[in-house]
Image 1 (cartoon, rainbow, N blue to C red):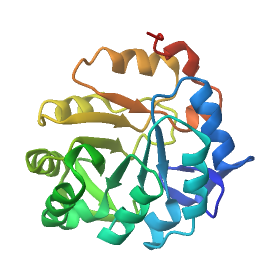
Image 2 (cartoon, rainbow, N blue to C red):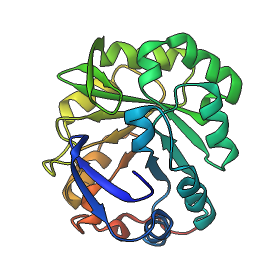
Image 3 (cartoon, rainbow, N blue to C red):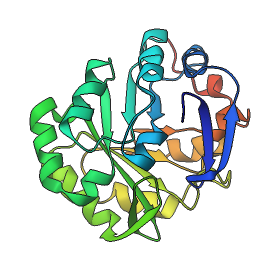
Length: 230
């Protein structure tokens, strides 16, 4: 947000913590500590639909060798092309996926399903959009099933009631999602300690987990989960 590394509490812009240092510096640190991917969200674009963080994204891409996925404001073809041209490996469609399955289908045809993740942010089973400030009547599981059938390679599922709360993921909602789709599912929201990752790792169908605030607060030891080199 505004070129800074921030964490929001339950997606609220008025409950923001700013971490000193550039986004590229933090990205390099997480790569050193063993991250397989970096999950980046352009919060200005998520809230307002317009990015002011393009240079920060490019700096992150230049700073690391691990792949990067970018979400926030991916609501038109131009934004998606711009992100991919900047070196992002995968884009995350959120708000537009809830609005238009046709758009998701077209972007999958344009760039390939492997480069498209659909971010499904939900509260009480219903999708929320536009930086979590607008609720919808769309059922999260139904949306997940639909985008999976369209060929999206990945679903990133966030229960926003747990995000930033350091209270653990919503395992029941995640298990329901895993049972509904065939594509890769990444758990997001609520990871607050090493034990949460150990519990998530028991779910063989789960492709990965996104860790946010717990990394910046030092509550999760990423090095403990580093994959052995081959």
